[in-house]
Figure 1: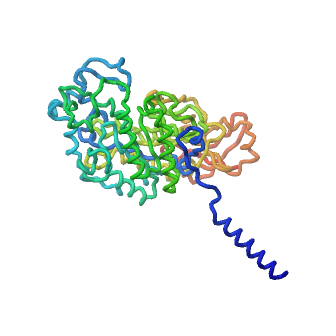
Figure 2: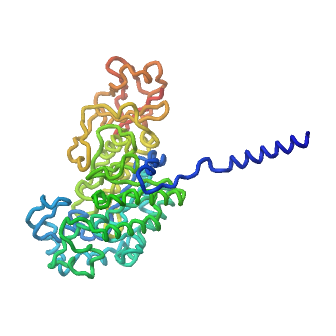
Figure 3: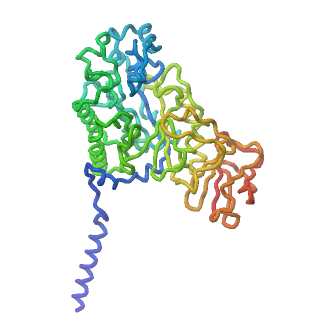
Length: 504
């Protein structure tokens, strides 16, 4: 009986050990249908990250004129094509075409292809870039893998027009991924290739007509004709080439894949990418703009809004992509940088609504990052070094904020927004902590939080402490029918947004 008990105990012990070492749940393999893909969940690491760096850098950085759309505009000598609607196109020349002819010659003689040998990236140092991004407080990095110009910034197995064969003769994406890993930053890539279908004006008077360059300029067709099955299959091959060979944690798509012609590929893309993440042991994020229609059902990927924000809290995590440059995504001689103060305010506004901010830089063609952009990034980093606990790993509070300034919502709406004031406050939260980020420095010696009038959870009885992040003094405070009033002690070290930490 004694020996039998020993055996039973040993069997039970071994069974328990086997159970504890077995995976608690089998990894879900996604199928290319929306029912299966609704099981996708945004990774917690991304929800916590809040701030990333976007990088627009390529052959279009060589002319450094107007914007990254130089390759398109240099061929528009007689008609200014609207981006997606041919009825909005209008006759007339444009300054990019005139500049190109005066500087390089007619596009029949010096075409976009001729900028590629001039794109040498001779001063490109990916480790130095990552040190700067980390100093800025970024948690993830997304370089453009291929823009509308179809020049691949990686060792493509699909097109010879890539950065290993031509230009820098380096695998830019591989080098950036390696440097990001060394810096402890999450790494993704963006694809803008879909619009290559309609990007270049292909006419006999330009080199875009030459079939020798079709893999760069795209196939000939009537402007805005339906995208061919052959081109969509090429897009698929290029996309899966990136996924298979670089295994990015984030895969970001520009507009045009929202066109109906791409619709059947959407669930196929999501399943392929998510299953790559499972196979490689990564929690991945697929981002898309959903500009023309709801091409990805809610919850099956992440919504990205270009140069715009949301007006209120969104249940699912979302992202704003914007640029330090007011007028361009790639470096140009006329680049105009936003202020760090305005971008910090935007970051607080976005995070308060369950969003993240992807902030773009534009390096020069040689691989150096202009000093004005470095200054903006380091100033943001200085603010996050003090106030980051109110940004990273936070979640939305009862309401996103308070104050008189109304935020425009939707794509390309940022230019309509006015600057924030000291009355504009954004809230973020952690367990038993409320952060109130005041978007300008008050000049009357106090902050009044109207949202805390008669609040059930945070009130005079439950508040344990109140402090200003980065300030050494303990402020005086009281609650009445006007709200929670917190004195600033007259002098503050803060130069940008001011953060109040309320523990309760």
